[in-house]
Image (spheres, rainbow, N blue to C red):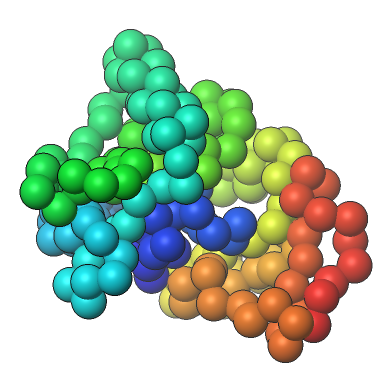
Length: 194
């Protein structure tokens, strides 16, 4: 669900996963699995069935993403991504799926529209404060939670300031015009399409 939410459509869906908040007890194992899954993604021509991640929309988008990744590296953040196959990315504006580990939600600053996933670890006892930090970004289109604990689902649902909240599934599946879909804050005006 993380990989498809972050990297399908080269991360250029409005509902794409931009920030993955992971409880620190499971972070190492989850991030190792995520890194392995990301390394298996194929970047290239989206007309080829074997391609998982196509190009971003244009050269400006590609350059903006590159500047963001470089700025995060300059801050000392851990950045990892597979090397794209040069032959598969000859024509187009390609960005390898990228994972950046943050120290705070505030570091994100703005939405990065492309195949870039930011990861933040949190301590279980800090969940409420972490949810407030997420809400403070002002963005509120989609939010998801994966847990087997009903109380955690209830806590996230109660704190969420997002138009669409998904539980134990990916966050990029709504069919606009068919299913209710809309956001809050910087992500919409309130009314939902569908």
